Picture 1 (tube, rainbow, N blue to C red):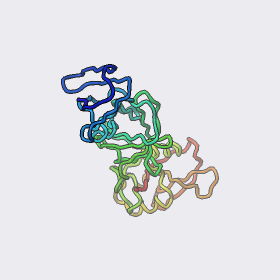
Picture 2 (cartoon, rainbow, N blue to C red):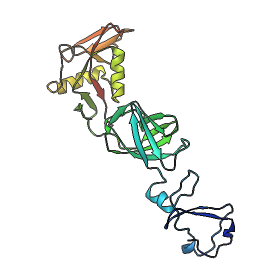
Picture 3 (cartoon, helix red, strand yellow):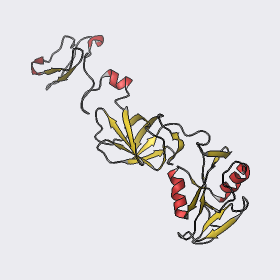
Picture 4 (cartoon, rainbow, N blue to C red):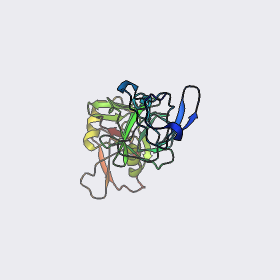
Amino acid sequence: MLPQPMRTSLAAALVVLSGSLHAQVSLDVPVDLTGTIDQRRVEGLAYPAEPTSAITVAGALVTGGYSWCTATSQADTITLHAEPGITTYSTGLKLRFQMPVELAGDLFIACEGLDPVPLRRADGLNAVPGQLTTGVIVEVLHAAGSFILMNRMERGCAPGFLPAHEHLCMQVQPTTGMTFHQAVNRCGDLGGKLCSWDDYIAACTALQGQLTGLFADWEWIDDSSNHQHGADAAGRYTCISQRNVSPIPTFTATVRCCYHPR
């Protein structure tokens, strides 16, 4: 319904009905509605079909400016499909979607037809286990070339980790037979890091009876013990056991990751 009076002739308008209740309207001249405030409206328009179409009140207020997307995932990338489609990553673009699977670590988001961009938390870190679980509703904001995760930071430790204290979580089940660089990548993929020497002693002492495979092998830590070109491992016999070796692939050890909840 187009309330009257209306200066512009509708002779130049092409009205395409899309059903008995809604229609797509295309006008090649400006429309000036001069009725009272409560009359200045256009009713019966369908949701926009193109990125440049007008957004209805329902679209702007109810669906959040058409930011709701359907999500699929492959490896480390979450692909989002929006209606209407997103043609560019503009600063301030806010998108919401439901996680199709649980993911953590170094992740990317790609709107359908566009290249993937990094997904980071507001503190610049990767998402940790327990933040992006299957079915959780996720909100991201595009800024400075990345999508920023707007969901709350994690509280407590993620599944598979135990709290040594309020600001330190250690992984319960280690992974064996990894080189130093593989260990670094393993913890990064989980959104954590290798434990520092201080982290390891604190967590090992506090959680000694709850950690699987403790003292069964050397465990890589993020420390060099002031030895140039060396890598450190700890925990072979006690929490304070330590050795320094070359980080070349000849040497393997166990990796048990840490992270600091925020």
